[in-house]
Length: 420
Image (cartoon, rainbow, N blue to C red):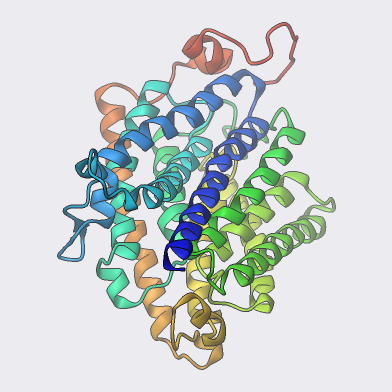
């Protein structure tokens, strides 16, 4: 029976890892649909190659830094997967695959924030650093027995570890790149640069939602965990209310139910519930979802119009901002009767009699991850910009990155008219 349970857990981890891997296709479709046709090949190449680079580097370096023996609460020092090649013990392999697709998710989030203007070779340099160092360090702090884990921080499936890391890295990239040509007028007003294929973006959102059933329930790491069904329910409800929150917010504010923001609202709800999906009630999940659906709309408008930061797909708002709030919401909405199902005994948030301790822990963790990720990635993008140049030329940007960077078009043979 023990062997059967182990085998079931292994199969569960692998199947959910495959679901999370399919999210790469979702990100590719969302980012392609929300950007212009002339940059589609570039988007697809970035989403493919950041996974390929990331999986190799996470195998060689990242996994050990993340889950190795703790050194001062900051980083792991052993358990590198490469060290057990050729040995009979392959127990880490299934867990490595699961964690690799999580690392790939964090890396590929940045693609949307820097879309339509970053040089492809420079995106590859970024992919190396986030997969080999930036993401593994955060993962060790929270999931690998590091200092935030010891403080009691809860980020069950990665609102901070995965999504905020990707979001804050994307913010650094967007700032260093500057806005796309034609995005802002001389008076500071912004112009909408619409995506070329909303049906494709919608398909991407549905694929991401589907993959999230591997992301969140899979984080139980056990086929027999009583938390699996609860996590699936909270995930579904948060995504649904996230879309509803965004839809009604835009309907009231702009007099029309905006499709692109509604799609991002679903993703915002999913990101927001990822930290607490195993420790909050279904009722709380609905509240978290609708709040994140509204927050993402406000955040997108602030970045676009007030801060003048051009994020073509809203990646920073969806993943960075809603990842932050989702992590903080654990400190408000956690309930022991749900948390205990996932192995978190006696955990209650502020709204359920737990006091301020958990909320302060969540806040400390969120801010620390922001400082580390944003700071290191801002430095990296700055160095790339100064040494080899970060952004494509004006001519390449106007023509589209597909032709100059990759020598092909996504829609060869079609005549596409677009305003630049």
